[in-house]
Amino acid sequence: MRRGAAAFGFRLLPALAALLCLTASACSTGTDAVATGGTFEFVSPGGQTDIFYDPPSDRGTIGKLSGPELMSDTGENVSVEDFPGQVVVINLWGQWCGPCRGEAPALEQVYEQTKDLGVAFLGINVRDFQQDKARDFVIDNHVGYPSIYDPSMRTLLALGGNFPTSVIPTTLVLDRDHRVAAVFLRALLAEDLLPVVQRIAAEGAS
Image (cartoon, rainbow, N blue to C red):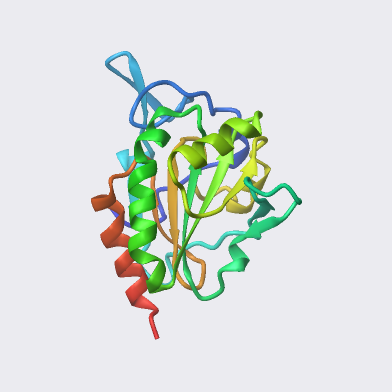
């Protein structure tokens, strides 16, 4: 597996227009999607779907990522900055996306197994213009961590142009300094994510 950020030439604004879900291991269209048996699967430059940034110089940073909390009726905001000194796992999802439904139990499992290690999870719910349906997804899947409600995908501007946002689900793992340590451009199993989060949490543990 190739490492490092040098292979990326992603641009965010074209990616924002590319989020239409086709049944596959991830939901994507555009020039970075290839046909596989009548479906589409996202392939990043170099064919990578799991990308790891070696510390510290190769890791990118993100801007301020904040937005309304999906389950709040009072306009409460949630932000990456709410988790200082913690590893933060960011998951981009939509209730309309089959792979997101498939990976939800795995994400919740890893959240429960790592939250005592100083790990926080934050979802970003995109393209769900009916908020009640997105809330039903959270309830039905017993999701215990917060999500930003962002149907228009404006919060993703905080990721800048160096990180892919044209595929749902995408999961980013931030280290304790909130630098991007890993990116997964596919639906995950618990055994995919857990050792990565445990390793990154151990790197900066006091």
